[in-house]
Image 1 (cartoon, one colour):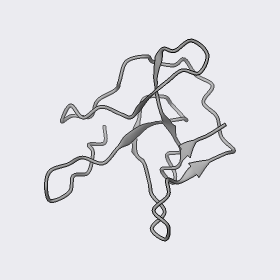
Image 2: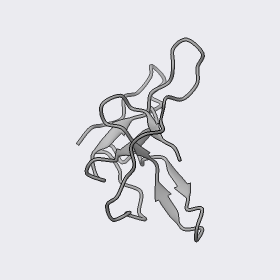
Image 3: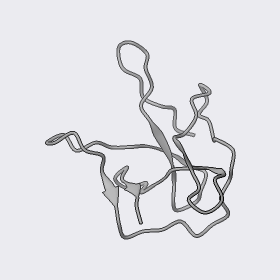
Image 4: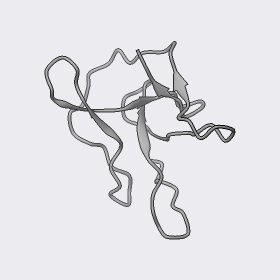
Length: 88
């Protein structure tokens, strides 16, 4: 399991869940040129959604969002290759 990288003030980076397997933690990346979040408009997650926040070994949870259909909480899925957040 990947642990969240921390800055010098011990603040962890935001993590998402890999869209490939739905359990592997992946650091979310930011474009170093403009500071925007990296996004992936091509891939989708087709597995069973876990409504509980997966945590790393240091108990840092993944980024969660609100399901647009029923309002339940779901993790944010990420491309494990480049850390880009999946978008629709």
